[in-house]
Length: 220
Length: 222
Image 1 (cartoon, helix red, strand yellow):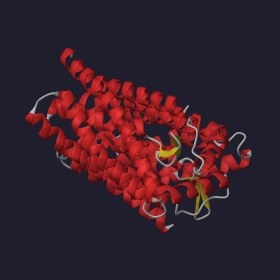
Image 2 (image 1 turned 120 degrees about the horizontal axis):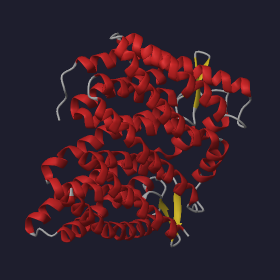
Image 3 (image 1 turned 180 degrees about the vertical axis):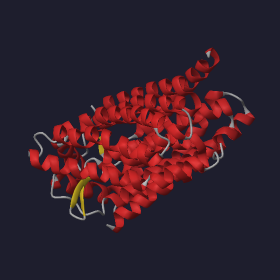
């Protein structure tokens, strides 16, 4: 529990810190870094207070918080640019994973066996992840924009967007992604755990989003 | 076979670097340097065999970081890249801390084998990730200084790139090999790894000189 709280605190602090130090470019790098981290964390399921969820949800919510900051604080043009940027970098991540697996390991190497097993047993989850998350980030951007036109309250806009998009990137993603890995009931439980955590974490990140929105621009 | 995969890795890295530079200009280069540092660190946990010597993976990917940095250096001068090392340092600290902490959380009973393997990989290989990040940040710092000084003496791109590569690669490889082998590696293993890693990296970086020339021409056409 303590470790998770430290991770959460670090993720929360990193957003205003990076924005203050490096401005928009810092947030763009942070967005892609959290995207990469969520890909890595996808392979670890954790249990906290009897709730089972994937650790990727923490980095993924950090990613989405940066999306909200971009829409609110910066401009839509930059947001579109960042969405387009995901594609070449996701391609790069996938290529590096494939190349890493293809190389013949040395005799002393013990990592490859575990890595191969991890990839093989979660292949559907790993293939679906970039597709579903890219789609859901795009949906978040679209839905949040619609919400913003009707209401100016950050809490309502973010909560409703999270509740709606969460059905896609938590529940549907986990049901399809875990076919063959675990039974249907377990997939639903894990998906619901992620859904719940996504809503809670989005609310926890609210003060950070609102703080960055109120802050003057960082140093370029 | 591994040599062939290495060539493919280098070609893909350089092509994607040119694509990112053409499409997103300097901003793309900044993002490239940070994200590639993190990807290469993660790749370095796997070791492969080249000429009967164990080499950590990610040579092609990490070399493209230096080439990206030199594109920026060539185009904008030292003023523009002053922030690079600071950016790399801060993002690396966040990345490393989150990775280390991630292996310390209680795992769930769902898909527990994958989570256990994740913990074991992270726990036993964190030194490779750390070594890669530290060596590249120091390497970049040295490169920026040497490249700039060489440019002041003789403003020839290929001279600056090749000569600075010869110097900073040695320092980078030395740091990496030392951190990854100082506990249980023999002097013989350290020396052979150092020599092979140095030669391969120098070759990749020399090829990268052409990429800097191509990137410079891109800008002129815009």
